[in-house]
Image (cartoon, rainbow, N blue to C red; front, side, top):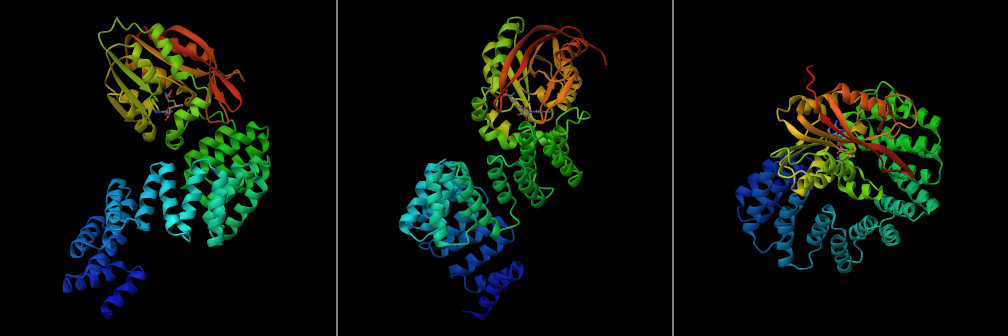
Length: 508
Ligand SMILES: C[S@@+](CC[C@H](N)C(=O)[O-])C[C@H]1O[C@@H](n2cnc3c(N)ncnc32)[C@H](O)[C@@H]1O
C-alpha cells in the first residue's frame, strides 16, 4: 500500500477528515483509474457533511469500475442516512441486480421498509438476510425489533434471546426483550432484562423510561416515578419526549389517586427545569395552577406531532365523537342556501376529521385548516379537502387573517384554552354577520370556576361562563346539546356542542 494511503487511512480513523481528504484527492488525481481513491474521497466528503461532493465521487468510482458494488453500496447508504428512501432503494436494487444475495443491500431495503412502517415487508427482508447468514446479529436484532412493532411479542422474545446468544452484551437486545416481556405481562422478566440493559448503558434515558413503565404496571408508582425522573434527568432540557412521558406519568399517577406523590414530583420537576415551557405547563396542570389560562403552544405542537400518526386510530378507540356532533350541528344550523359560496375555517383542524364530515353539509365551499402541529397538518393534507392549510396558532391567526368566513368550527380544540375570550373575539372578527360558529366544549363538573385545568393538560368549562361570554362577544346561541364527547381512560368526557350565530358587530 502506498505510504500516503496508509497515512490518509490513519487520519480518517482519527476523524481528521479534511487532512485525509487532501491526501485522497491527490491520490485520486494521480491514479484516476483506481476506484478506491474516489470512494475514499466520497467517504471523507460524506463525513464532512458535503453530500453533493460525496455523491459525485461515488458516481465517479462507479464509472471507473462498473462491475463493482462498493460505490453503489456507499450511495445506497448515503441516501438512506439522508432519508432519501427512493434513491436508497434504487441503488440497493442495482446492487441486487449484480449480486442477488447481497446482504448489505437487503438490509438497507429492510431498513427503508421499516422506516416507512411497512413492518411485514421489513421482516421478510431481514429474514432473508438471516437465512443467507445464520450468524447475522444485525438480522436477528432487526427481526426482533420488527416483531415488537408488529405486536408479535413471543417471536420478539425469541429473536432477541437468539441475538443475546450471539452478542451477550447487546443493549438493544435486552431492551427489546424487556419491552416484549412488559407487553406479555411477564413483569419480573421485563424488569430483569431492562436492569441488565441498564448495567451496560446507565445513561440511556429510554431504559429508565421502559423500567418506569414496568413499575407502573406493577402499580408501584414510587419506583415508576423514581425511574422516570432519572430518564428526565438524563434526557436533559432538550429531550421534550422524556418530559412529555414524565408529564403523562404524573397525570396517570394523580388519576390513580396518588395526587400527593404526583404533586411532589411536579414541584421538583418545575424547580429543576425552570425555563422549559412543556414542564411549566404539564407540571402546572398536575399542581392545578389557576394562573394558567391556555395550553402552551410548544407543548401542543410537540404532543400532537407525537400523536399524529396514530391519532385517528387512537381516537376511534376512545369513541371520539366531536367531529360527528359538530357536523350534525352544522347540518342543522348552517343556512347553506343563504350564502352563494361558503368560506369555511376549521380551527385546530388536526388530521381533518371534522372538516371531512362538515364538508357535505355546506355546499360549494373553500376550506381553510389551521393547526400548530405540522404532522397533523400533513395528515390533513392527504384528505385533499383543504384549499389552505397553515401551521399557526389560532388567536394569532384570527388577529392577522384578512378573510371573512361564513362558517368556523372548532372540534375538541377549545379544551386547550381556559380563558375563551380571545378565541371568541377572534372568531367574531373573522365571521361574516349571520355566520356560524360551531364548537365542542368539555364540561366542568368539578368546581364552580369558569374554567379548570385538569391534570390531563385539558381545560373543562362552566357552561354559564361560556354562554355569557358568547353573548358579550356578539353571538346568539342557536343550539346547545349535551353529549358524551369521548372517553378518557375509563371515564366519559361529557360536554356540549354549541352552535352560535354572529348577530352583532362589537367594536373593540
Ligand atoms: C384533539 S385535536 C382535534 C382535531 C380535529 N379538530 C378533530 O376533531 O379531529 C386538537 C387539535 O387542536 C390543535 N390546537 C390546539 N391548540 C391550538 C392552538 N392554540 N392553535 C392551533 N392549533 C391548536 C392541536 O394541534 C390538535 O391538532
